[in-house]
Length: 195
View (cartoon, rainbow, N blue to C red):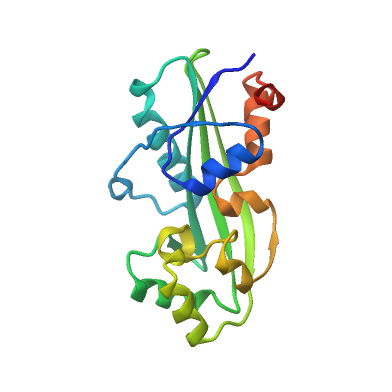
């Protein structure tokens, strides 16, 4: 059985990931105000934000699966979302280069037909190489770091500064495809039905 699939996100990277596995989602941007959620535990934070984003769009669609996602990057004990400006991005890169951090992505899949919700968090370790200040400034000038949790894109120019990852590759891009497959299975849907 195939059910309509809704992505409650404006992220083109998440949409491309879904399309790469045969799901062509209806994109329904939540525009949820993330600043109203003040949680310091990264797992609880991304799961709560993902749930809020998915729930906001429920009244705009029917008989669908609605996927909400949210990612943060943690270095030490600091939680990094999208940097608000180039100066913050630069300061964060000063802490990230030659260091490692953890990327958390919350996934919430709401099945409107069965009235069931599955919540999961993907966790991936990211290891950065040595990057010079000039390289950081050039990277920030591309604009890419300003639209990504943590201030880097694994699928973009930022990949040149990442030495290795431990865990799910697509989770760092914003959506763990293996995790989504298992969430669909838990709701009795087969990913291959979208092919």
